[in-house]
Figure 1 (cartoon, one colour):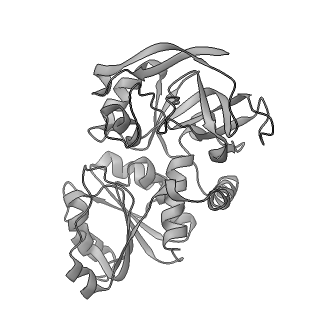
Figure 2: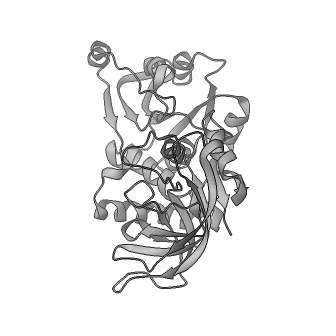
Length: 330
């Protein structure tokens, strides 16, 4: 039995109102699990939705924290991992078991567990798997983006968006980052974006047309949705592709079928949780290779301490700072 701290919410509500640190215990992992001593945990919008009660399948007590990195402390018989190994992966926090990563220990799903490349710190590793796996599925699997194409990214200052900047550049694209505010755009340019568009001050569709000589972008990655994404569609070129990867605004984009037909573009869904293990494994091998080549690295924005979990989760409800948010656990 392993004992330690765990951030939990006994009921749904605002993170600052309902989250408390409790003493918890972890037994030996079952088949398909790896027990990890958590060193760092990633923070994402899905974690906020869990606490608020807006995530499918989650019931109190809520123990958020889908992404972790740390050291293996226990494995079941036949596991492919060994005690002491440095790993990063995804917890079953959004499933039936309340064992999220904002804790001293966490169960990690073995099929979603990866050795940490030597180039990544625990903090970087904690925010690597979900953003880059999502970006890879969007750009390399759902549409197979080609070198020389122009990629525009909504919410480019966020975790998935900034990961997509790096992956897009690694795939040979010209990348246009769309974000709210100059600080986020500076972060995007530092991550590798070729151009930046401030959606708070500029007409996004018009800027996309201007930056492409009137042609419009080849690919639009949209993890934001809402009215902004709907307006941005006018900046997609004839025969372009739109990737719907989320709804951080609270709603999905609205597509006019007549416009879609006349401009011959396509709209493609991106859901990282629906892929087969062998597809995940192939994607992860490619991503780890890009890390080892120095082409991609987790775009960490802020690193906060364990006691700040409710504050960090709350900050995401209003957008938060740029980059991937990380909690240092131990």
